[in-house]
Image (tube, one colour):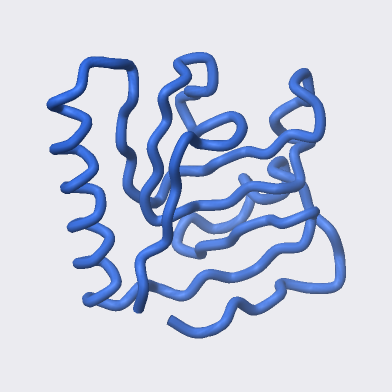
Length: 121
């Protein structure tokens, strides 16, 4: 995968991000939009392996934790009551685990996951 490329010098929010084409992959960090290139086959294989191993581990342990593969948005609001469209940091880790049901939203995770990783390659 190549290095991320900044969209423009302008800053954005999730409200802007939702308007962009679905076939483009972006992350917002403090309002700066960075493009995400398509992952390689090797990268996807490693990500699947990581997610599978975590899922097997979690299946043997009772609890609310669930594993989610990319793409799934993770929102980092500046305050808990922040409107979704106003959030300016939204990322997509390759694999994440969320254990707190209060963080789950239909379109992603609200706040830091309990575990997240990016696959190499």
